[in-house]
Length: 238
Image (cartoon, rainbow, N blue to C red; front, side, top):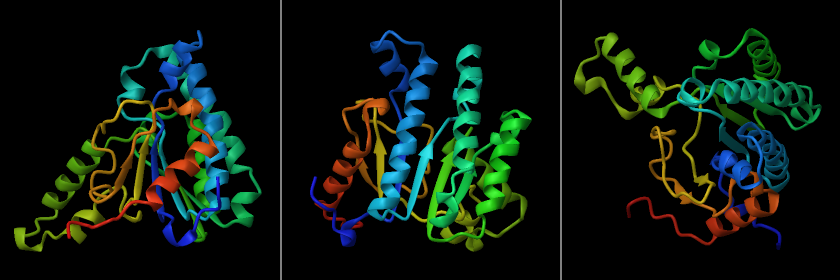
């Protein structure tokens, strides 16, 4: 694919990596093996995004429902994959040479085992002052839950209705530090949104639904999504 023009790149790309389990089933594998293959794609896409010049990328790793309703074996394997992947990520020298700030958003501190939480805290702490690139992972996250909790916090502060602005609402979300999403990609050949994922930040986002399960969505497919985005006209309601 030809070189992408940096003037037309999205600043913030969010990816819902759907289709891991369906990919595994189609290949005669266990569901967790699809998650493991998907983790490899995340590594590749993260590197590709930095090389291309995308400054911020977000991945929805798991919803609250993923960690409470999936079979126990799959949940255990998913947490194992997280531990392996994040241990490797947090030890990458490129996080520091490329000044990549890692954020983890969601209720993961309530849901994850101590070892995994320690790995995540270490990476967050080590990169908290970086500001050239941003890598966000949504873990045990539901946008519906995030919005509801934000409204409850605002109500608890006793603000008069006229004082509740869009800026006030944004400040109370888990995603308070994140910019709006320019391009939201959901793989899996099932074009829909779910659980209010980043509902505030995606209200003006361009949407892309590649007809690939996430383990088949590698750097070349990611570039194709960016090229498609570059061809679109963003009107923002005008």
